[in-house]
Structure formats: structure tokens, C-alpha cells
Image 1 (cartoon, rainbow, N blue to C red):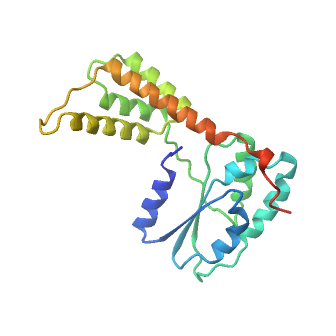
Image 2: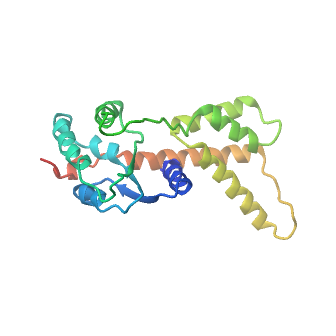
Image 3: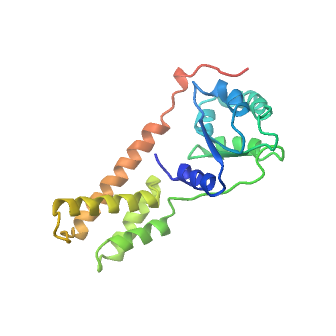
Length: 219
């Protein structure tokens, strides 16, 4: 599910005029991570995404072996004499996986900084709902929707996109009038609940384990 992490690193790369190299870690790309990092162009910002999901399918007893193998990837020689900046994006893997992976990544010779980016904070979601729902909508309704959205991991910017798309559709339904029929609070409530269900189902599909089909790619 889109959570905004990719847009964040794109913005950082653009602000600092960096070449953005995005490497998504899965079965068909893991063995190519070292060569890919070695071939990254000068002045690069390298993004590793999906590493936590990948390691979550590695049996617990083999994780130390996997991390030792992964350390050889981080020890690769790079093309840029000045080195490059690496972002490792971690998502919603289990706490056990996050603990093992973060301990490995936060070694001094690897990642020196850790930033927690919370895009599904209930209070922030509540603010977005309040901005777009009709005035007079009961606070209890907004609180409940914000709670459901936060539990489902719906990022607040996805809610903003939802409301903007809905407004655009209403404008398209009445072109040239300069106005559109505003939906009722109940209608908007049902639409937001549908969005929450869609995001929750999508996250469930992404989190399904594929361990049975995974071959051992490290030794």
C-alpha cells in the first residue's frame, strides 16, 4: 500500500539534486543488490525498499545466516569516490523482524540515523477528516473514523487524495456551473469506510507469506 515513503525520498533527492536509485528487494532482485549498488551513478541516493518484508519470510533460525550474507552486500565497493547516501525503508513487518533488522542496520558502519515516519497517526487523520467533512458533523463520528483508519494503516495523505478525487468527480458531473452538490456527512462516512476496507484488504494481500514458494538465496 502506498504510504508516502517513496514520495519522501523523491522529495529529498530533488531538493539535494541527487540521482535516485530505487532498489526493491524481493526474490528476483536480492542477488543483484551488490552489483546494482556498485554500478550506481555518481552523486546517488540509493533506496532499499521491501527488505523487512523479504526477511520476514526467512525462517527465524536462519536469520543470522541471512544477515551475515546481507553484510557482504553493504561491503560492496561503489563507483562514487565520495560514497552515496542509502535509505532503507521499513514498513509494517512484525516487531521480531524489525528488532533483528534494525539491530543489524544501526551498526555504526552501516546506517547512522533512524527516522520514524508515522503517516497513519490518528490525530493527524482526525484533522484531515475535520477539514473535509461538513460543519456540524458529530465529533464522535470523526473520532471513530479516525480510529478505524489508523488501525487499518491508512496514511493521512491517502485520505487527502480521496477527498480531492471526490471533489473533482463532483465538478466533472456539473461542468461549467462553478459549483457542485456537496455530499451529506453520512455519504462521506460510507465512502471513507469503503476506503478503509480497501486499504485494509490491500495490506492483507501484501502481508501474505510466500515462504512456501521462497528458495534459499543466501548461504
